[in-house]
Amino acid sequence: MPDSAEPARRSVGVFRHRGFAVYWGGRFLTTFAAQFISVSVGWHVYSLTRDPLDLGLVGLFQFLPFPVLIFVTGTVADRFDRRWIMGICIAGQILCVAGLLALILAGDGRTWPIFALLVLFGTARAFLGPASQSITPNLVPSAELATAVAWTTSSWQVATILGPVVGGLLYGLAPSVPFAAAALLMAAAVAMTALIPAMPRASLPGAVDWPALSAGFRYIWKEKVVLGAISLDLFAVLLGGAVALLPAYAGDILHVGPVGLGLLRAAPGVGALAMALWLTRRPITDHAGIVMFAGVAGFGLFACVFGLSVWPALSILALLLMGATDMISVYVRETLIQLWTPDHLRGRVNAVNMVFIGASNELGAFRAGVSAALIGIVPAVVVGGAGTMLVAGLWAHWFPRLRAIRRVDQVDRSA
View (cartoon, rainbow, N blue to C red):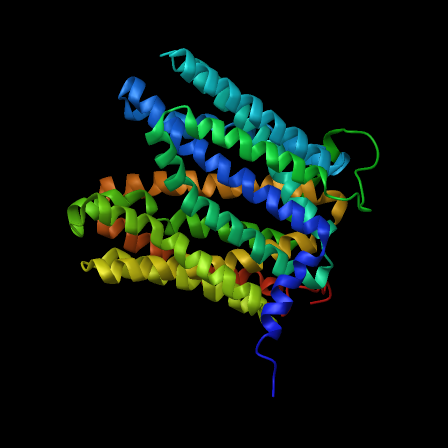
């Protein structure tokens, strides 16, 4: 009789690797603290100016360093010890948070110092991202990489679901409290990062010239499995994102008010978290490429269901399933990118991947808004969802090697 507890033991077994365990804890604390900052800075800036444009600038100034420094951040992650990069970047974020805290305590009503600190905060995140993404394969065996990715993604989902809630509650106590709490959590993350043991890894050889800086782009273009995986996410999210229009759905279509909007906003994250936890226990062991394309198609299908729904319960269910199917494609895609990329290139490839992910989310929200203004809210979501399903079909046809991949824990370049 099969042991029903075996999947659970296999799932948590990845934490027996001390390096991964402390890395996972430090990354969770950093992400959780960053959510405090995100929600609290928005509240604080809007309380100062009452200008919605400033809310957009809060996000823009944090994102800009990613594309601007794309050739540098990945190269640094491939040339230097990724543990030290993580520790230094988190420490840099603490200094930025301390600066924001000082402005609040001083009662400074200017916004430009806040935006300047957010640029520095985003710069630290831009260097932190490729290093933290690239280090996971150095901490666990390749056979356990998929499980490690699922656990890492789960922690990110928990942080992004609960972080804004906790940050908002702390801001309600006093505007300075969430910033102080974020600094303490990040300090703990620095301590945990320092406990990651040194592990052998390839490093960037030779001079830092243009061929070295652009090697990530050239590798992605040459390796069609990686190119297909990254571009699939870019276009699928660009077309299928409906989150930006949730306030309009809550107010004008579903008539559920702010409480309902909160449920709608939380639903994709809850669905993604549930699927990520499921994948830690039941990893995908065969036909991974087909499963990934099915996940993207499902994401588009449930976006169409959400777009057409006029019943709040069905809308929430559709958003839950959107999050769950998106997580399936994220799980396969992220594992493939890490495993198929040589270690000495992993930082530069992840730098490109992170910019594409950020661009797809930012541009996806812009696409949804423009489409809604031109053709209406419901058609914008439905057409976008249909476009996502079309992308899944086209990419499955154009990238047969990606479609043919069976296991996420093995690299078969002969396929």
